[in-house]
Image (cartoon, helix red, strand yellow):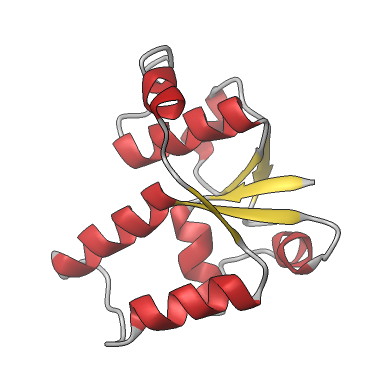
Length: 131
């Protein structure tokens, strides 16, 4: 399975949060699955940290980069095709980062791993990260 993990899922994973469900953990750990992390998620985390909404340790960028590579996570850059696909999404959700993740999942035929119930209203393959 090809999974795109939502920003909060990436944060929960990196902090070993109990909010991340056991089934989601198994999916992320499974070597049979490819795990994708969008540049939009790293961008969102960076913004939240700079605004003081998210506490990160000093070496977050270094640790995150190393951990993503070590765990075999794949980077998903934002391309023109993704940016244009956002235009065609219904307005179930106002968060621009989530809208980008939805567009990327659609364009790349990825399953979005998220606990954000609003995302379940879109025509995109979704798995509940809280399970």
